[in-house]
Length: 184
Image (cartoon, rainbow, N blue to C red; front, side, top):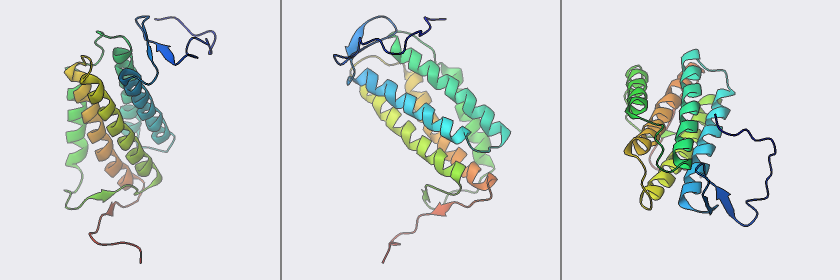
C-alpha cells in the first residue's frame, strides 16, 4: 500500500503543478491530470447513483466499477503501470449483454430521466463520456494502454443500459425523444 496522507494540504501544488505516483511533477492543466480528474468525477457521480435505493446487483456492480475506476486512475497516475486488463473489459461486456437482454429494443433516442436513480445514472454516463474524451486526448500525446480506453468506453455504455434498468426498477418510465417536440 502506498503512503497514507497524514496532512491534506502540502503547498507543493501552489505553483500549478501536481505530483504523479512516480514522483514526477506535471502541470495541473495537463492532459494526464484532465483525464484523472474526469475519471474522479465519473467515480463521484457513480457515488451519487449509489446514494439511491438500488437493486442489489446494480449496487454490487457499481461498487466494483468504483474500485476499477480507482485502479484506472492509479494506472494513469503512474505512467507505464497496468491495472485494468481485458478481464475488466470483458466483465463490462458480459454485464451489458445480461442487462440489455431484459430490456425492450430501442426504437427512439432516450432523454435523460425516468426516475431519480436513472437520471443520476445518466449524469454519471455523461461524466464517463467526458472522461473517455480526456483519456483519448491523453492517448494522442502519451501512451495509454488500449485496455484503459476500452474500459472507459464500455463503462459509458454500461451506465446507459443501467439507467434504462433503473428507470424500470423504480417504477419510472423512459422518456423518449420526439422529433419536433418543443415548448410553445
